[in-house]
Length: 187
Image (cartoon, rainbow, N blue to C red; front, side, top):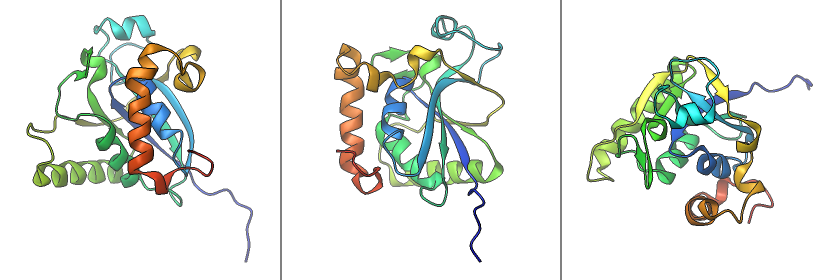
């Protein structure tokens, strides 16, 4: 029997430094339908970019990914996550410093939490990094979309120096490592 019922979609919310980097990488993956840059994990409602950058709101820059779990698994999203950022540097990714750049997985379900914890345990056992993983794993309480100019930032601003120096190398690395998981037509 064939049905036309839409397949269930899931969401993942991840913070690993500047949201422009994460958004640019996840947008290219097959099964990822939408990536929204935003903020999570803070104490105030509807924060602005300037407030988050001040480090006083407690929010992290994150991406919220809507995906088809029949095409790409949450584990796949985590594999990409732990490849494109350094999960061992508290409140820092490269030259981006502050709690808004912390490594964080904001879980949407107990299953996501279990998968994230198992992934961190496995990576810790594999000793891929000299320093311990500091990625926080906490339930998502609220997600706030970032301002419109932050959405699709890399796509809309490829010549911007930060995009050329920081974002583009992460996109290139992801394409090389996860080329079998890319959407058709992504080079």
